[in-house]
Image (cartoon, rainbow, N blue to C red):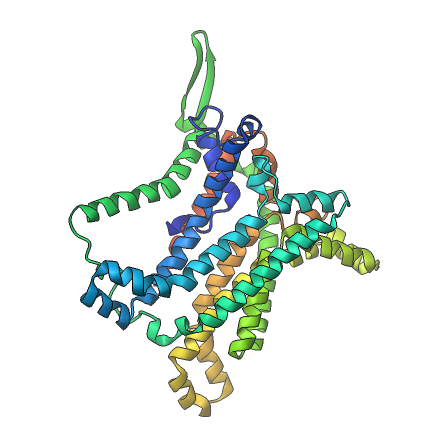
Length: 447
């Protein structure tokens, strides 16, 4: 499940449109939107659901591992699995389930690639069109701000109640694997295994197989009719043709690297300011509100600032550099970098507060080196997450891209409206493989 956690949502849309397009048994294509709005809505829900499921799986797995403390194991021995799950485990999983839900709402609500592809109107897309044509409607802005404010209040109240779940006693590091705690035997075990592997096949194997099939798909006109099939040589040609996307790849990599560096710097700076419990909860709520803010609103703010300050250097930065899209991407990267670093920093303080009290007599450089070594993996994780989020995002900076700059996400967004071709499928497959290899490397190091 975690192999697709770094795969962009437009790659998921390409994969499902490639396998279930015009010739498929169910049309995951923009043609279905004109035929049946309900079918288009189902396509959007399915693609977004499969794209966000690895993130929800990761958070819920972390929650289960941390919830397997002494109380849960005692409930398992005394009352059995059903009572332990209903009365003990699920209440402890509440913050993790809430975090999965809120992150899903924020990420899905800000996307407009899939909804625009299937012609499903959303508030984000409406704001994009209003900002693009300079026809701002106050009700759209108020609705977006109200949603962001309500989400911030919910996250703040959840954060205040969830500080206990980051205590060292709930870390699960010295406890047995939770997968061996629930002794499921008999037919239920085989049924659970079948359902689990079926979900993995639907979420992981089917999209990748769709891209492989489409990259090598060949249709020939012969006297007896059109012959369709799969060719290894055509698949190889599609892979070689990826060189035509060289310019878009360079722009995307450059933009992602700059945005990642700035996000890490802002994340570390905000981490230094989030000292107490109340300040941390306020920072978490602010980061959640920033993550949930629609991209067109961020673009509108940057455009208003640029228009109000008509200076030569500001015009040069907006028209000749990547400064505007880098700043716009901080609405996605900064909250994620802060969240990862804050959790790692707090767990380090809780786990080693006795050793830190003893080491207060050491020089500052020695104590800083100890913390830097402990934070090396969280910093690497933050960098990779921010890089792939920047690479995959589009709505956050589409309206402030300087002339002549075309990223991969923008190119794929345009190509998806004309149907998936061999070359598009090979590009999506290459991006999916890069994300899968990166996730495999990261989780192997994280163990």
